[in-house]
Image (cartoon, rainbow, N blue to C red; front, top):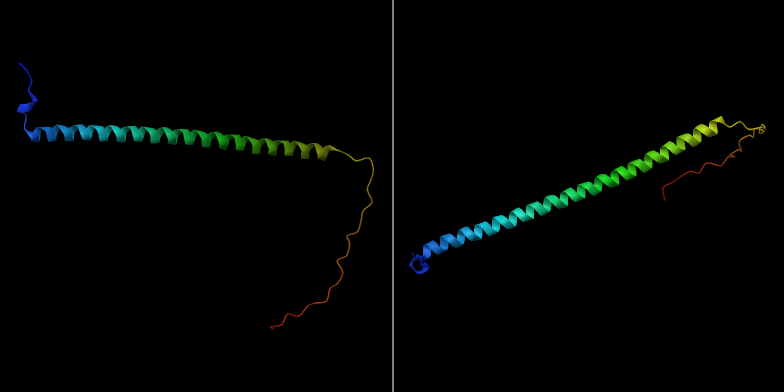
Length: 100
């Protein structure tokens, strides 16, 4: 028994073509969605990495600054520095602002 395509009606061709076109579109949408998810995951991973590296850098700077301040607080200077009076700012005449 041979399958003869000439005996099929044109509506059957239209139906089969519509199904095939629908499957192609569905496959395209599925591939595009998977690509979008992959890009989103890669971007999220990159942002997470950058955030952690910068956070660690800031934490390291803060820790080093704390250690420096702590060590500087322990240092005793062998001499006493003379106290200085603050320089006077002087007196300046007040300026009257008028409308021009």
